[in-house]
Image (cartoon, rainbow, N blue to C red; front, side, top):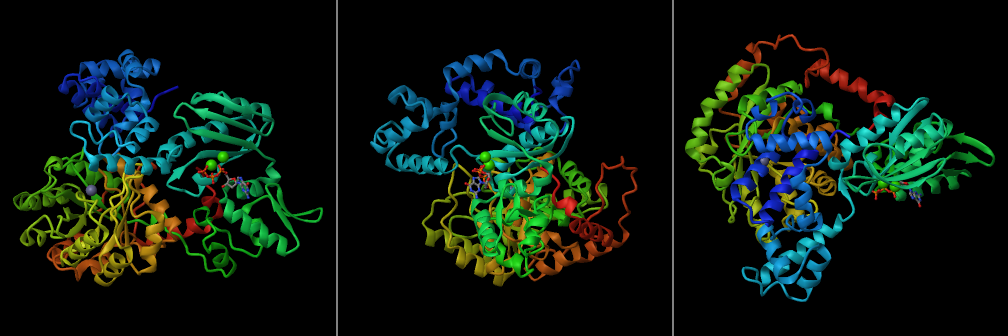
Length: 630
Ligand code: DGT
Ligand code: CA
Ligand code: CA
Ligand code: ZN
């Protein structure tokens, strides 16, 4: 089985933690941590680079030692040092280092002094008040550990949608290659695009059962077959994720897809409607007595129930059925509706790639504009910008605009909201920027009223265009700030400050639930990646999923608007965009179209032009596209 770059990066970052637990030389620890970062953001697959003499060593941040480890991993799936470290520091112990308040040093202390090696023993010790007396711990930290254990427990046994994504794609592709197979879909919470999934549910139609089940249970990622039957099998993957596969008749594929997509609550409501109309609905079809009314496609079944087809993201029994009955379902936002990414970092602060690389990457996605938003000075470790650095940046942005024509580059900044609600940059510098986003990076644990007042104060600042990852939560490790959303969203709507759906999968912030509430309050949203590397731009899909689950349409999203409309929307916000307006307008007219011969299919069609809009509309109309997996 070929390890992906992400797999190898994970091994390296675990090794960094293990070496730190082992009190190894800090330089060695850093080398692995840096190596993991390089690999995670690498565009070329390591499996392709490894066999070529000297290629790995050319990568910045990869020395001889790491190059050899990569070759071992590519060749055999593991490396001796990793195996040996794993014996001393099992994965349960590594997991502890990810809890808020703990790191390798404290986890080692916990093991040496209290014999703690996993979450259960940690929780027991914390409840008994044994942590507070350890040197450097104290009562406050003990409470923090308990809190973070409970956040972790909420997603215990579940994985991030983004973590399941490549595995799901790989397995679905493998099933499509089985002779005779005609349809493969990933159903369940994966298809509903929940932010985490408990297990994957694969549906297959066509082909012989034996061939399908062989391909599935013998897939290279499988480490355990939990059950194998004629029509259903279950396996566990090396990552721990469980996958259920059902082989269903093609004639009832739609009924099976509907049933196994769920949610359970949605299914129950549908069944009620069927019964009220003298029919019955199960995974084989919608029937009246002996007669099958509909079963081949989901559309057929919804239609027979007098409902519009409901996008899977909305199937949570939260009013979607009523909307479908009245023909009032929202036309959900799609990735192809987005015109730009307004939250991107470069290696000038804590990003991986250069300004030019990031802008080119945005352009290659077909975006009409992007905003470069480095951190501000209070994030010193992350290379945050002070006033003087912002001024120097003006020329750098101008230079990249000349160098990469055909995309508008907004000069932005991600400015920290300080503990009292003031901004981490002087007004003079803020006024030089086209696009200012603000965020909380510290003191997230302030009491609700305090952090709400702090955020409200920041939003009032006339330069602020949007608030990034508004709650600051990290799924599975940190609750967000205790904001009064009613107050924050209402004021944001009045001020015309957008709220972000941050697409980093462990953030997904605003969440689907919060984004829905924001919409109700009249807030305009912006869907961004917070990219710290070129390949992060593709994470946008996860932000779009959260938006779709919230019922968001194109008109609710600032960066689904063409540049001129975006500027209209934020112009009234003090400095934003207005100063550079004449130049931007002129550039738009004279900017040469990109005429570089593109590899066919390599560069997507331009977005947010008349052609792109027609294209998107046409695509939306085709049911075939809706059904496209994964
Ligand atoms: P997960 O895996 O916990 O993230 O969530 P789901 O929604 O994927 O749940 P799962 O894998 O247990 O089942 C997949 C779908 O199958 C579920 O969304 C609805 C359907 N389903 C499963 N069990 C039942 C049931 O007892 N009644 C009904 N109506 N539907 C069910
Ligand atoms: Ca599932
Ligand atoms: Ca399942
Ligand atoms: Zn950021």
